[in-house]
Length: 241
Picture (cartoon, rainbow, N blue to C red):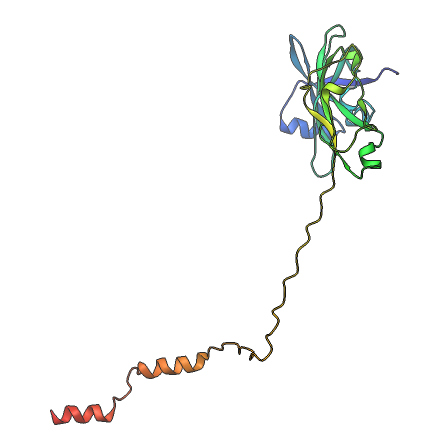
């Protein structure tokens, strides 16, 4: 594989306004980190970083950061992407020593069609898509390919079942499930509601109707409105007294 070299420039100024001006010039801000070294603010081309991210090894690509003629062997430590347009906004780099191991995350790729799917009608449940590994920078695998063609219905494939190169140590717990084949979920069948069958000879019950108008009239009769004259009989009784 050909060496990848990314040109970088050291930044003397930092801050939001400076970063905006950098992006307007077609560059993005970044920071170069290293063991026992002070962080160095840098600026790089987002196109070159994007090419690295789209490569087979992605974030784990080992490349040279050319800083004023001095090359540093680095990998991407972190990067920030604009949520809406997907443009790179920031990238951090970690300088590595080729003779020292480091911890990285490596993607898992399933290979083959499980017998539990092909013959037994199951479905593959891909549970763990990344593994934490430790190795020398030059030995970082692009991905971990897992053959699942022999996986039967109800069976699990765990981290302990994997076979990786001797120079790569898996840090993920051995009991973690990578993938398993499960039975498809049965669709719930809703039982139809039985219609009431009328009994022969029985009269159909009439729906109860509340006559709101009548009720209101009765209420109005009980409470005479303000200013209404009282009953004549009631008045005669008072006159007699």
